[in-house]
Amino acid sequence: MIEPDFLAELDRFDAALERETTAMLQGEQESPRVGEGLTFSDYRRYAPGDDTRLIDWKLYARTEEFYIKQFEEERNLTVHVLLDSTASMDYGEGPAHKFEYAAKLGLGFAYLTAEDNNDFRFSTFRDTDRRLDAGRSNRGEVMALIDQINEIEPAGDTTFEAALTAYADRIRTRSLAVVVSDFLADPEDIEAGVAALARNDVDVLLAHVVAPDERDPDVVGDTLFVDPETERTRRSYFSGQLADQYRDRLQDHVETVSDRVEELGADHVLVDTGLDFFDGFAQVWFE
Image 1 (tube, rainbow, N blue to C red):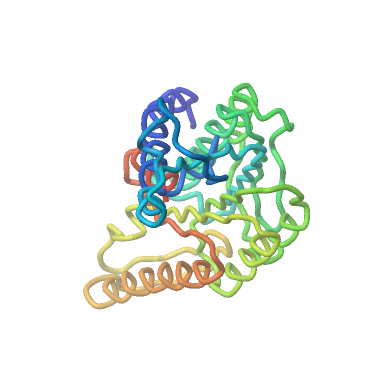
Image 2 (spheres, rainbow, N blue to C red):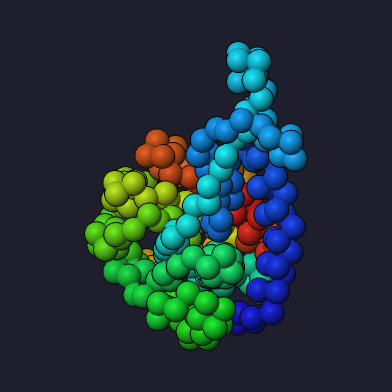
């Protein structure tokens, strides 16, 4: 069960976001993904009283004249949160539960987007997507989303290509698509879905959640494994060499997904749901 008080923790980002923006002005670093991002606009001559941190010293070296960098706000960004609600997300205990942790990551993006007066869309997806928000993009909307998400029971499986392609066809504005999932699917299918999102010049961010027990299963000996999406079972003696092979295959899968989507220009962040939520969210937000 997601409690809304976790949103208050995100207010701690205010100071962090200000530091990011200041760092960008001083060193031309990228601004945070969401909110009033600043992009270089033009130069003008330095005038007494201007912030000396904005002087372009490289230009001064060439011209021996002081010029100030001017920046403009980036507005009207739409953030599309796509939350995997398939059966494999119903895994983990307590705060480490994959679906709840993933939902909080998505809600965090919605919350901070609303705080910066930008628009968000929030959907779950299986074989197709289901939009949950009502288009208001405010705090009250986020609170209503928490109630809706608490009623969802992850089930079924998905085809990333079909679900993400159908969603991509409806994006019409400058956007960031945040896909939150465990990405337990064929990497080619994931790649095709991300390619569909990215083809419209949409920035794509994949928040790849994995539970601690998935990375290092706490089982030894004769064990019955169940695929939560297909309900197929397999009995194996899980120990020693087989356990090492499992960890290697999981790591290979994560790296393959990361490599394929990054070749498309998307960002991929692996988040262990055993992390404190604030730390996990910061990992994704500042990617």
